[in-house]
Length: 282
Image (tube, rainbow, N blue to C red; front, side, top):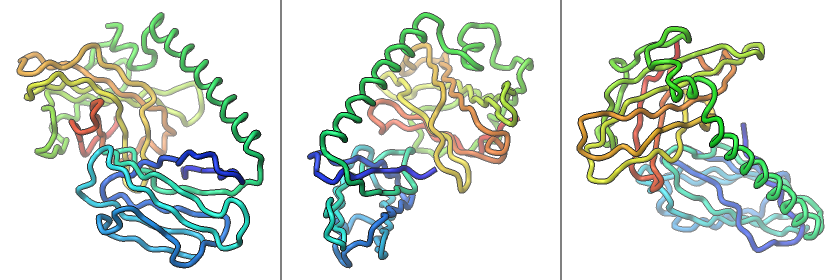
């Protein structure tokens, strides 16, 4: 689904960051007309295509976009009302690129805007602390928890499981090698909602330990699906014969879980990437 941004009437001094990925087009849509020709894009020549409309603009990031690269983009509104312009910081990411951003201008005071942000930050902080406490006390849940606790082996058939190792596609640029890849599917109490997971054993041919930072699942024509649960028992050390397991899990509708997907895993730097194509769920 599109990302939504609300612009306060008065500037706050902050610039909203938006993730972009190589060759994944992104569209910005506004609820007000733009000044023709007002688009300012930092290092515009780096981008493969840039086009503007009356209330939108489209950008196609370069194929050689690097994780963490940053480009500022600014547009001005044609009606003269506050806010008179909008600025965003485009940040390179290997997988979590946004496809569409809907921008709304709101006539609210700075105090209202700041108070709401403070309340949301406090709420998010409390939830994060509670989730971390529960995670430390109970460990992960779902399919991931079954594997982590040893109650279910990777090839256990109590949940639908499939060895998809042979059918995978992998670029030569992958930072780690794969040993075994198993996909899983289980039902939930909610109608037409399923849990799916991928457990992958990885070997590290590099010189530095590797720890997964995040993951994303991408289906054809679908929005990137961030991970619901992620588990790795220990860093994957270099030059060891024993592969280490990483488990990623999502909650999807039954319809969303059909078809073929690409799974991307990356470390803290965002540069040591593992891409697995042709991922399917049983």
